[in-house]
Image (cartoon, rainbow, N blue to C red):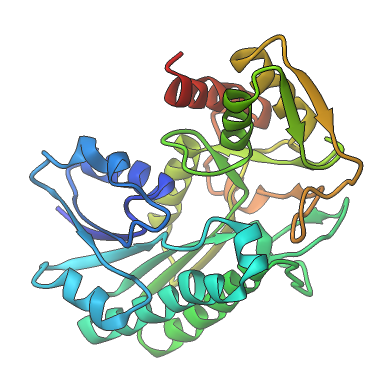
Length: 318
């Protein structure tokens, strides 16, 4: 039985990862400051004797170390803690400095002091910047993020790479696309559902709806992360996503409308970009991951359709 630590363990991805690890008989310690995560997302796990949750700021080295406490034989850290609100990080860069980069720095300090060997890190496609129609692969460059979130994820990757040389036995870097599913805490589908709850007759959309991106269901994401963690190697870096070119915001808006409020009209903006720091279109290569034997179970369209049904049920009881 392996003992795993998940930072951001009460968040959307952390909660799904914890569920998967526990199902396979592992022990899990989840730590979260609950600024973005919610205790409700892990309520179903609290009766499992192999699960423990502690609240702490993962950017505070001493607080993180104290939260780990006497937990024994932790071999793997899954570092999911980060700011998930990109527009908030644009408005105040200190948010991403603290929640996205300093969490990484503190995690590495604690891992070094405790001699925890293995780190699995949730990075992002936001580290690449805007490559337009160019297929984005892991070796493309230069990397020019256009959001503070992307900049701090890229800085975190660099810090982790240095730590591999200094003391880590292994590090895996997961570059996520847009991840969807439940329990949803943020994202475009949840935003659209909330808007339709407030104004059932009308859905206002930022941007003109032509923004096109890849979407991955969280179940496929967790499978991919755990698959990568089993591949031999000291430093692994993978894009994770579906094998298609994604779907448009228009398709997402129409799917949410059709399920949540079929008579609503959709009103689009005029710009191709939804907000500052938004990459309106990107094509994402996952060939490196596919060549290891993993493949997604859902396309972007299928993932969106499933997630919309799940999130509408979560928010509107349908």
